[in-house]
Image 1 (cartoon, rainbow, N blue to C red):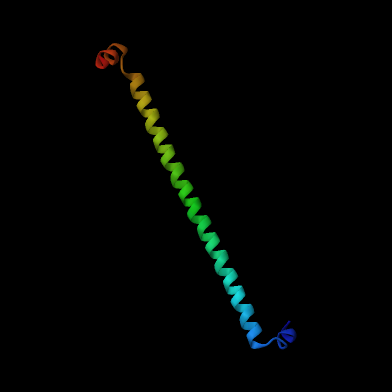
Image 2: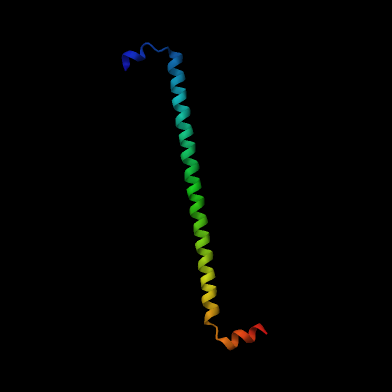
Amino acid sequence: MLFTLQFFSAEALDNHLTAVQRDRELRSQIEERKIRSDAAAYEEAKRKAAFEKLQQEKARAEAEVPEPLYFSSLC
C-alpha cells in the first residue's frame, strides 16, 4: 500500500482525507441524533409510567373510600 500511495498526488491524498473526515463527522452526527432520540424516548416512557402510576394510585384511593361517604360527598 505504501508503494501505491507514492503515485497519488498530494491533492488527491488531501481530497481522500477530507472525504474520510467528512464521512466520520456525518457518522458521528447520526450517532449523536440516535442517542438524543433514544434519550427522548426514554424520558417519554418515564413520564407515561409516572402518569399511569398516579392514575392507579388515584383509582386505588377512590376504591378505598367507603360507599356512603363517597356518594354523600357527590351530592
